[in-house]
Image (cartoon, rainbow, N blue to C red):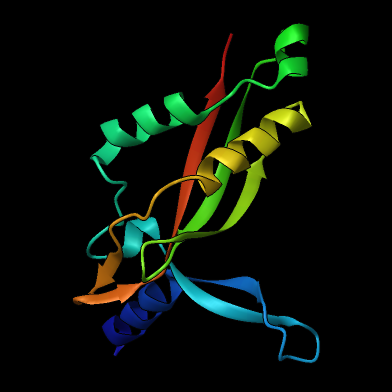
Length: 138
């Protein structure tokens, strides 16, 4: 009996609700359930793997001019959802840099990402929340 309760807590602990816009709902919002990256059987992956992701970030990221001129560095930690079709959505800054232009650039880079391979649980495609730090160093 105790084991079954622990298993149920573990299974529900991996789901997070993400707010999305639903024009048909009276308050214009709805929720989708997404799974955390560490709790899926098959994790979503950027095309080309980790090396491909690093190359994409380095090729796409543009240092904001004002931050560059002022010598501002920082790291922006963002979360996003890889949908069941591999598209990136629900991009959010969860730990901001000291300069807002760095935060906006990190969101822009993530929004430009191509489709990822999808996450799966028991062979079923599921939306997965991922966390990615993007560094800005001079």
